[in-house]
Image (cartoon, rainbow, N blue to C red; front, side, top):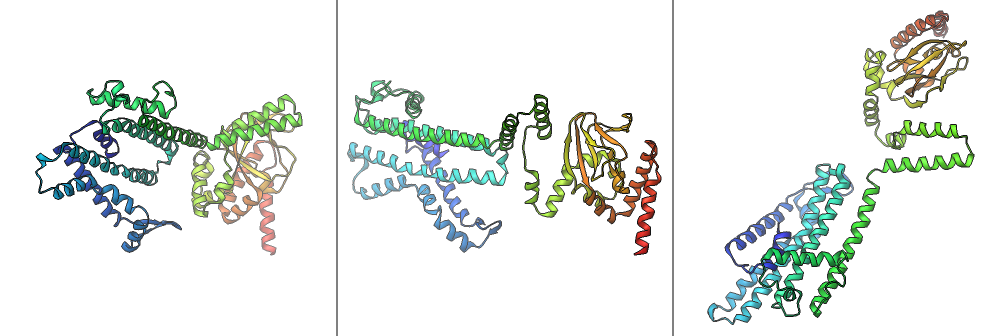
Length: 465
């Protein structure tokens, strides 16, 4: 409130010593002095470890004295009232009524200027805004908050500049060649005076009023130059910060566009056919959904427990849709999902080819796949929540059928190494999968004893060892 009300009161009102104004200033000064005391008792974050808070009063005081204490103290001391009190004491022998009117006016004007020291409280506002962003995690809106702060800062500086545009001629007694006298605003209502002053300041700051109202006096000329320099500086800083903040608003989307641009240049360089280019473009659109993340790098920087929690959360819809997971042990599910890899297939893609050696099994998060026999006949179709490809992993045999994507399919793959490592720890789950695999072999006309025969071989090997 001081940053807004104080310049207006000093520039456009002459009742600086009214009871209401003195009460307002005393209250605000008291609050800020109390804030200084509170800062001596407020813990600070350790610079080398953001999670540790320093609560030692001596260390807190030492840090505060080295940083913001003196600026806070100067902005909280009522220098204007102290000046008036000392001036009255020094002239106590004289009656205030016989004090020369010109000298009294100069004293009040000097007191006005001393009260401007309170504007140094702007530093506290900047500090508290940054602290609020950290405490309340406003980084959501961290970009919008910073842009909003920049706009507010520009408006505040424009407000100060407007008040200064009127204050200086007022302190000079409104010379005839001042812009206030030229526009006959000496006796106008304060809101009209402020509006004209703000318009003049913003015109200079935004460089849109150059030459329209040329300064008529040396003082006015210097004020105009000051407004133009401060305005141009703020405007340039605002544009630079706003541009950087907007670019960082959605860095993943920007990275996606850059990656797509690289792919387009690659396709043009390799002179790929039009149909293939279209498929590649559609794949990127479906795979990344307009955002690009290096998920492996991000997860790799997390702790093992946190990485496991994130992966479990990301795969929650898969776990909920796969009946096999719904009835399984929680530790087994957690071990499996942390080893899954996300893959996307387009309609018509052959996910598994009959006769090849199996290296993966798949869980369907979304989409439909067809189980295709050697003669091209579709034996069955699988959809959300199903899994396939486990048969050859259980039997070490070649793929017994082909699997083709009927629609866009979002799948999670599990490699044979991870598959065996997990099932070795959970033999009951292995038997469950072998039972399902035997049923599927029977359904597509294959020998279901392949699975049980492989199980017997494993038991014999273990017995011989």
